[in-house]
Image 1 (cartoon, helix red, strand yellow):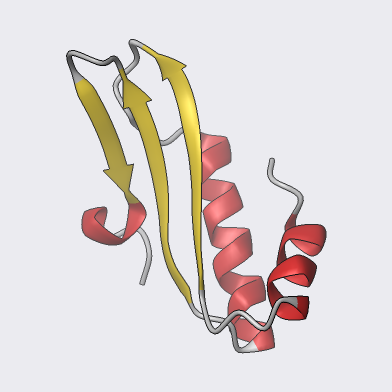
Image 2 (image 1 turned 90 degrees about the vertical axis):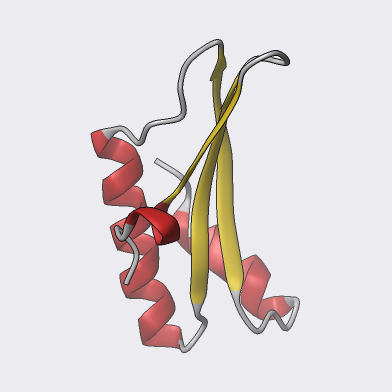
Length: 80
């Protein structure tokens, strides 16, 4: 699970107007969110709402050079 408090703290201290989360899954694997990814995204979305910092998207990047893959929580409808 991504460290929620330090991540938001850095964003707020830097004067961010919004944030995009992203991370990489091991190469060769299709980018699909795990249960932990979904929980983390939900936690960040809730915390971002409390502090008034819009969470634009959470992206997962995966695949290989020949077969790239990504997953967008926004595009999939998992991020309201």
